Image (cartoon, rainbow, N blue to C red; front, side, top):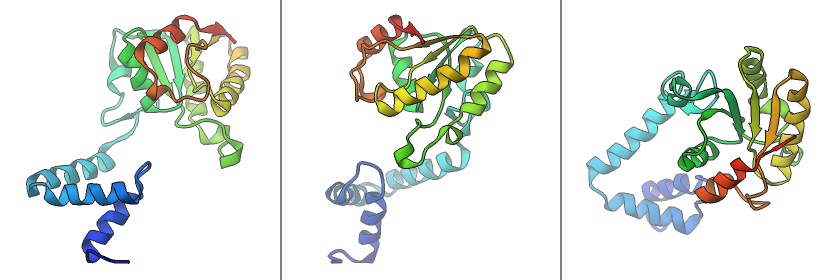
Length: 199
C-alpha cells in the first residue's frame, strides 16, 4: 500500500533492491536521505553516477579501479613473483588491512557454484592464466573463502595451475569454515597467510 506518495515509495523500492537492505531498512534510509541537506544528497547521487561511469576492471588483476593499472598493480614496491587469488575486491581489501602481504592480487569476482550456475568460465580465470603465461610469477596463493564454493574453486585452480610450474599454496585454516574473508579480523587473516600450505 502506498502511504507516502509515488516519489517516496519509488525511493524506498529502489533502496530495497540493494543487497542486505530489507523493507524497513530501505524506509529508514529513504527518510534519512530526505532529511539531509540538498547538497549532501546531490553529492551522494553524483558519487554513485561517477562510480558507475568511471570504475572498471584493472587490466592486470581485475580489481575494480578508476585508473589502469590499479594502484596496487602500479606500485613498484610490490613483490611481482607472488599473486594472491581472491574472490572479491572486499577480500583483497581485508588482506591489505593486515599489512602482512606485499605481493600482487588477482580478483576472480566470484567462486564456482553449480547451484547458482556459476562455472569457471564466469570467473576471471582466463585473465589469471594470461598473467602467469607472461612469466615471472613463482607462487600463486589461493585465498578463496573457506566454504564449499571457495574450496571447489581452489581445487579447480590448483589442478589448472600446477602444470604451469608455479608453486600453488592455499591459505591455512586460521579462517573459520563457512565465513567470508571481508568479515575476518586482521590477526586471523595474518595467521592464515603465514600458515599457507602447498596444494
